[in-house]
Every structure is written in C-alpha cells, then in structure tokens.
Length: 279
Image (tube, rainbow, N blue to C red; front, side, top):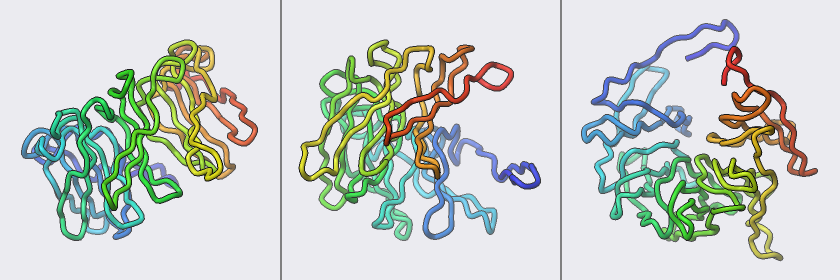
C-alpha cells in the first residue's frame, strides 16, 4: 500500500508460492469492496491462482487454483462485468493448451471455462478483457489467427458467443500484448510489432456505428524516434486524451510517454525516458 499524502509504503502481503507467485497483472476493486487478482504461477498446480484480498481485515485467500483444464498461467487482470461476474483469460491450458476465457462467480466461489482458444481463433493472450458500450467483452491474443500475429475478438458472455473481429499482421500491426480501451464508442489499442517500421502501431477499431460496418485503421506507426515496442495498455485521462508508453525508442532509447488526441487524431511524444529517470 502506498500513501500518496505521506509517501509511506507498506508491504501488505508476501506471496509464498503455494498461494500464488509472480503476479503480472493488476488488482481490481470489486463491487463488494474487496480486491481480486491473479498470479501466473504458484498455487496447488503451479499454473497460477485467483486470489482475494480484504484490506479491512488484511486477509488474503486463494479463491481458485488454475488446473490446466480451466486454463493456466494468466498474464493479465480480471474484469468485473456489468453482470457482477469476473472475467479473465489464461495464456495456456484449455483443450488446445493455448489459453481460455473464464468466468469467476465471487458469491459462489466457482470458476467456469467459457471458451477455448485453438490457434485459428487466436492463442496465448497476454492482456485483459474490457467491456464495451454494447455490453460485450473485447480482448486480444498475442498469437494465433490467420497470420499467427494475434487477433482482436468479441465475446458475448450470456450465450458464450466468440467472434474474431480482426486478424493482426504486417502493416496493420502484430502481436498485441495489452488491453483495448473504449474512447467515444471506438476501441483503441497497440501492437508490439508490425506497422510500417515493424516497431508497433496505435490502432482504432470502430464497432458501435450502426450505419457503417466495423472498420480497423492504424492511427500511428511507431518508428523508434517516437517510441517502439509498446507492451502496456492505453489510458484515457480526465482531459479526454489518451496516454500510453513504449518500452524502447525515444531520444535516449529508454522508451517514451506519449499523448494521443482521438478527436483531432494528433500524436505527440510527451517524455523520453532515460536510465536515471527509468527506462
């Protein structure tokens, strides 16, 4: 826990392996006031856990041990959907051992596999799911699809319907590692590779326009000078602009913090990391 006012840091819980290890995703605060997260390793089967942390009682508990069949090695975060259930993805496990989409019911304490990735429809997701304005879940896989460079997909949780919306590859960007976000009814995200310089792209997908078919377009090609190889997620700030980072490139080769205005379609590098200030 970090107190922004006093700048004080407190370790709240130390993972021990049997209860999960090496978390790569983020915590989410669920509607019940408790935190939930995942680890990609550790647990009873060594393939990760779903856990709950109650800050009021400072108590940690494993809620589910991934077992391969349901999925294994989740690399992203959980998403609490509008139906009150938690959704996530695993990077391995399932019928084809290339990942699953699962549903976790907090009240019942049950985890249910909802979909198996098989390569053709995507494989090995590294990000998380998000809920669009239409109530459907959207996400990306890092590999699989027509070009084995990942896919953008839609998942309707009530019927369990999965639809591949776009195949990444080549000039359109390749191998996304993050999670799409919704900005004014359009999805935005990044790919780690691909684009005109094979250093990643910032993309837009129009999915809620009832008058036009869904369209995918590259909004910015990363080229090194403006950053390259983005790994994380985009974030929309209170000023309406979108912010993100790249893991490399910029003035000093340590990556950049950038700003994107979706309304005017303008991109600017806000800060270049150097090693003394991070990289």
